[in-house]
Image 1 (cartoon, helix red, strand yellow):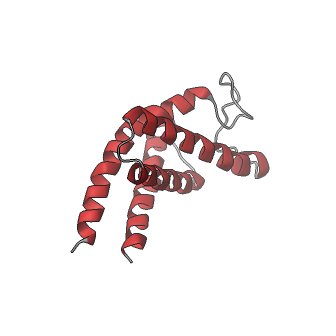
Image 2 (cartoon, rainbow, N blue to C red):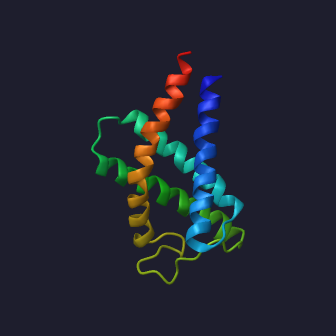
Image 3 (cartoon, rainbow, N blue to C red):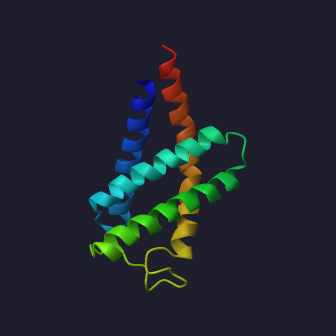
Amino acid sequence: MHKVKEFAAVYGIGAFGYSLLEILWRGFTHWTMALTGGYCMWMIYQANLTLPKARWWKKCALGAAIITMAEFTVGCIVNVICHLNVWDYSKQRFNLMGQICPLYSFLWFLLCIPLYGFSNLLKGRLHRGSSR
């Protein structure tokens, strides 16, 4: 039962946090971004648990790759297949199908710096609570 609570907490924080970040950045969000943000936070959290001694920049590169791959996958579904037009990077240099681009991958790298620190705090809090 603890794993379910841990998943729910991390996923929920990611879903809420990414939605809030996007509202602050663009002025709006879409429900699919909450789902994607939750998934990305869970994957980053798991990477942090799995690779505790990895250098911070390697973790951030992995986190940026996780977010970029999730963004491409979700973008192909919601933007290309379903035509929801949630985002469009087609005006960004070196974009791939308007769904991902190097600029945002770099921004995801930067975002991962505080995310891994937050993940460490969250891990300590969630795992301390499981020993009760």
